[in-house]
Length: 149
Image (spheres, rainbow, N blue to C red):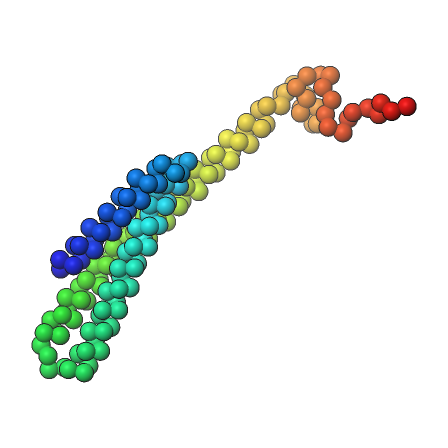
């Protein structure tokens, strides 16, 4: 049981370090959140895989020595650890998915703001291509008269 606690503490320590380092290098908090949640998911997945490997090894040993009572006790403990790590891993995956949705919605908001800014920079008094002019006499690209004689 203490090994689970140590692993959980290690995972959260890594996640906290990722948050601190991520805040200084990423432009948006949403992207930082995604990076943090991904690292957390990756670490819990890794811990789960290691526990699964130990469990399979234990099953192999039980098959070879079924009379060893200590192996059966270890099997129960290892199974509990696997279940707890699986729950942590699934929770971390859910948090990662939520963070990615938040980041995507933030990116959509930024894109819509950029589109609004582009539309608003044109003069609303003109229609069609003339709306790109900032003044009535402005020449647009491709409208330069031929000055060669």
